[in-house]
Image (cartoon, rainbow, N blue to C red):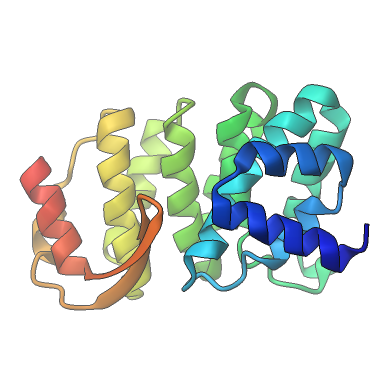
Length: 217
């Protein structure tokens, strides 16, 4: 099968929400992960986020059949965020989070690495997203996560502030992390951001997310 045809099938399955079909396709055609990566760049698109989420089922299925093959996918994602790769690894951090979420026993060693990537501003939204997703299936280290969230709530980038609020929503539920009082300072933040949640892209403000979180708390 040509890569063009493979990418078409991957896109088709993403649009259909057929994660089982994608996982089966990945077992038969290893370049499926390349197609998912190529479809994940435009984060203004719900399709890109579906491609990111699909990495979890794909890695789970591949790893169940071959631990080495699953680890190779993860290593490739890690390499894509290094200077040596010549790229930026736009969605690699989020995809790493999905891989850990899918197989925490196999890839839990990546959690400290993902948290450490927060030091790079370009990866901050992805790290916050990944921490939330991982926490739904595995324990995350509370102390460094609380510190990271605290920094993120004061970040100059509204996307980072918004992602921090979304991560807090998740972590309050999954890890028992308390909602800090500083959330109240953001209720008047009118910065507009686009977020992917519950399978759809929506536009909101940082303030709206803060008010939502404050009411839940």
